Image (cartoon, rainbow, N blue to C red; front, side, top):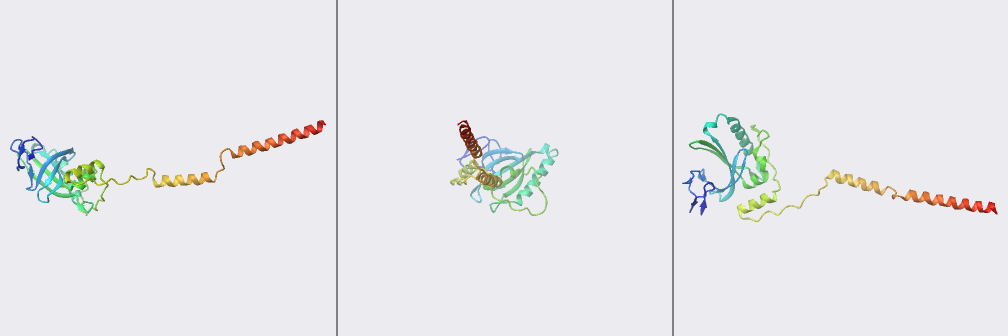
Length: 222
């Protein structure tokens, strides 16, 4: 059974478009929208099933009303620059962007970006590219894979039906410079006399002098 993520109308199988709310449910003859995840600066993200690859992916829908196209042209340009940046990126050896396309509807135009699920979970807000979004023609270097946040790993495992990847052992809270400083402090302490040792020696010396003086005074009195 399939349930429309917008109006929750139930179907035996997902139709191309929901009969009740009229939203598209299968896009580009390939991507079936399953569950809304979150809304960000470039639209709404959905859990999506790739009917061609038989795999769970993430789709971002950036919707712009036709009567707002002119005033939002700057946002559209920023989106397109960011898409160009993402097309040149890799995450753990795989392309970050699986597909990207546009659809025109009665009252709006939608820009769709389909992400590799691991890249979406691992890169997070880096996908938004709000630092300018690149946009140059030069080839962009691959992006190293990040360790998945445990919550994201669990969500991804739920999508794929696999067990969450075990979290890696946490790194020491002390940085290398801090550890080096600690070592220097230990060495310094090793070369420092024990606290209070000098005072004890002085007290013994004073005591000896007092005793000798007392003996001399007694002899003179005799």
